[in-house]
Image (cartoon, rainbow, N blue to C red; front, side):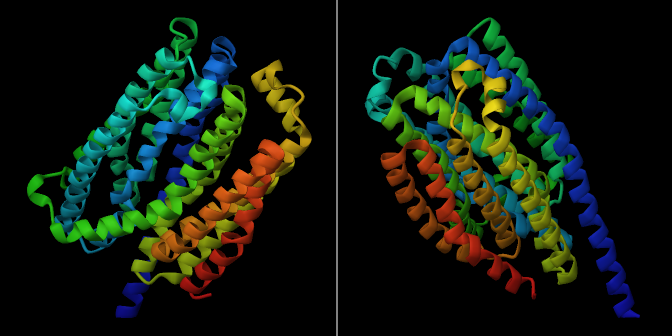
Length: 446
């Protein structure tokens, strides 16, 4: 009798996880609609009006300030795992302690980060930060950097809400607010294009709109789950070390990837070719992020669901979910790669105008290889996180990131951006591309 009850409970929880993934995917389409307006309509319009050089400045500011995301060490998978386990046992006091400890820890880190970054902006010349080609852009770059710093620190703190939603299997709520943020950003960029075509206002339009949406998501979470509202009395010192160590591992295996392959590589490209080269590379970065967003429609709600299933010892459901994720992700990456090689040059010309006409097919092939490898790695990342192997993943990823950085530098020197991206893709496949899937299979009992 007891076994039958337990089996029924597993079926019910499995249905709830399936429902949470479906809801997240459906609401992701709303978010992608806003992303479409922002990435495919509003930002290209801004590029046409502002020019390639000034848009390159916007890209340099955005990628430089995105390094703040590396400090998001307190909101690693341990927080979502802890929220899931506490929810499974109806331990609302534990959830409140986790949420409060993470919030005030991040607030302290944000204050320290703001102080250090502000010191850099006050003392280091713009050409030293971004390269000699940026000489003479001081009056344009400096206000945008200060404004962007404030917005990115706010985003850093508000991203905590996204992690709490994951632990609650409420990714669909985050997606809905993300859609609102993208729509606000698209409208604000339209205003920038027609009324205030300046770098600082474009930074405000894009990133300020996202801050507004994340504030809405945060207040909505607190209203729906009062135990998620941070209270100073809820801080538990024993959780700080656990969250920090897990978050540091998460930063190594996930955030460091974006920092090196987007921020560091953008900086290298800027020093190698100036604002025009940064503008071109930024297009590939934006396309990569946009395309991976479609994979993340499924992967983002899947990993916390896998973690919750393993917490309940429901391995059959976890194995089915992981196979489904692998199949969908690989199929999408393959279609995207073929598309960029065959019609990529025509798409970029139609999308961005004559300035990007005549791009070589070898460049498209290099980007296709990098994106396919990047997607495969992402699939393995989320399943390693879902199966609780963050520290193992961090060690492996640290080695790969060092190799990718070295390969990107050499590739850029000897063959420009095409060889740089091809080298990055090949390195990813040679390191994590074969090692991580075997570890995921073992964790799932396959």
